[in-house]
Image (tube, rainbow, N blue to C red; front, side, top):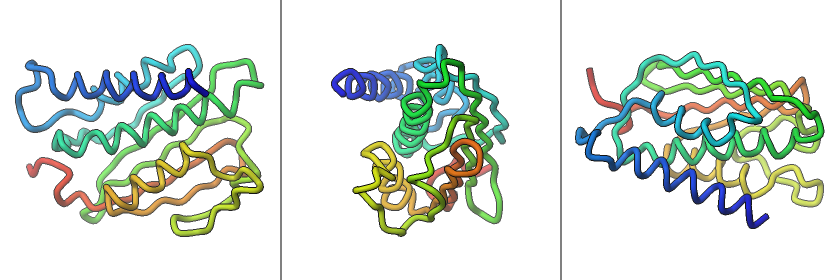
Length: 173
């Protein structure tokens, strides 16, 4: 538990340094660069496949996205240790109808306690269907990004769909 907390803190620290570095003096940053920084911490456990539309996000909004991706990767690693193999993770990001859409899917064992649900559904703490990491993802999507999410963890791995308005998040072309 303590090491888990320290790993989260170090990832946030590394991402903050990347966002704040003098090399990136602009007020925007490429998301692919930040995703690479986050995934580096999990490279012994995750094989990453990216399909990213090149979207340049405003820096001050990046920490929310980084928190979400760090927690998703952390959950993938934590809930699939019993498989004794690298977990394949697919991440897809694209624009659609003035929204940013994200799909995160791993090929792990899933979590039948989590089953299918959408943001706003109640969380059954007795069944362990959602821990602090998933709750942090939900709160960040809803409160910081003003978006929604859906989860399917019972049909082969763990799949999360996230959608939020691009207004105020990305640099206009």
